[in-house]
Amino acid sequence: PLRIELQPGQALFHEGEPPDTAYLIESGQIEVRSHQSGRPVLLSLLGPGDLVGEMAVIDDSPRTASAIALSHCVLFPIDRSQIAERLAATDPIVRSLLESQLKRYRGALAALQGMPQAPGLLPVTPSERLGIGRIRLESQLREALAGRGLELGLQPLLDVDRNQVAGYEALVRWNHPERGPISPAEFVALAEETSLIVPVGEYVMDAACEAVAALVRAGHGSPFVAVNVSARQLGHPGLVERIVARADAARLPRGSLKLEITESQALDYTLVGEVISLCHGHGIKVALDDFGTGYSHLAHLHRLDFDVLKVDQAFSRHMLADPRAMSVVEAIVQLGRALSAEIVVEGIETPAQLEVLRRLGCQFAQGYLIGRPRLLQEILAAA
Ligand code: C2E
Ligand code: CA
Ligand code: CA
Ligand code: CA
Image (cartoon, rainbow, N blue to C red):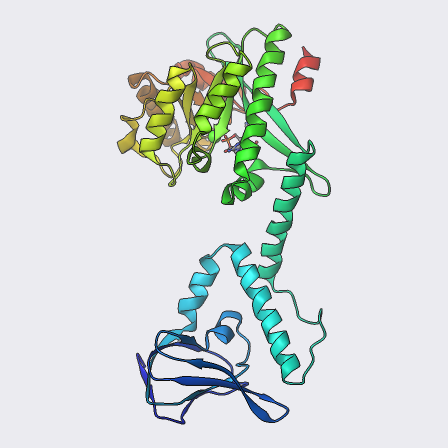
């Protein structure tokens, strides 16, 4: 039914029943009651605009109370699946908090009803475990930030024409005390969910500036370092100003710092445009990262004065086996040329792949063939 009507005294549901529906009260009044040593206890009085029966639907346990109409009532049923889909789509930490609260509420209710439930006997649900796991990971990341638990990997970019390393990409590393190294793909996303990404980004920027200075001092020419900045970071006011201030303070040679901005749905193109012109004013080049994956906003490309397009490794991985993948790489190289942007192709793992880049006239190659990300000390020691 799309709507339900109840007469005074009629029950909507009874304690102990399995739940399949929650209800929105359109009109009338409903009493929710439970039993305490055989005597009815009023838990709540609900009216128009209130939800009733949503709790059991959220965690799929039997109704802990009965709902009885006090007057003539009109209700809209809300199907379980309507709520379940939303819950599944929600932030796991929020879901976990909700489930913990429900468990505690049910425990308190059981105690009230004279059926004490020993703490610890309640099973931890998988989504609760996931949410708690992320809360723990976030706390450990905060600890790592405070205590030198983060490191900077530097992966070389080869100037294809000159056949020499021209610069490095800064890739943050977290050496987790129990789990070992954790990929930034995992913890950067976590850090982005809160403003924790801001201090992570500052750590990376400081370490990258130090790395350039150290490489210059050690006679490695004047390599650039490219730093990843996510859409979320761009949204934080003053980000570029802070980056520029750091670069100026470290007296980096002009052109030694680049930013990599990853295409994503969350990218605000007006903001990116402002970031690019601000960067250009300070001799900082800007790359569009992961170009061609998912959200290629080709329609915006002409408005944004990117200096570099970074072609995702998905293309290089397939270009030798698949002529169509090769055509796409060729077309991107031409596009870059037409827009006066340099091209970096990522994921170069074999000499044959590098040969293709040479043939196409692509400026930079990055990948395990050129070198894996290494710590600054390792690069300095190897020279
Ligand atoms: P990305 O910017 O596309 O970085 C390239 C990723 O590809 C790196 O993974 C790198 O180690 C890996 N890679 C490089 N060459 C090869 C290769 O030849 N073969 C294969 N299979 N992989 C290769 P990593 O270090 O795990 O970083 C993952 C992503 O995390 C990065 O993707 C970047 O989006 C993000 N990230 C890394 N560091 C930072 C950071 O400091 N800040 C932000 N906001 N994001 C970061
Ligand atoms: Ca990158
Ligand atoms: Ca990339
Ligand atoms: Ca790229």
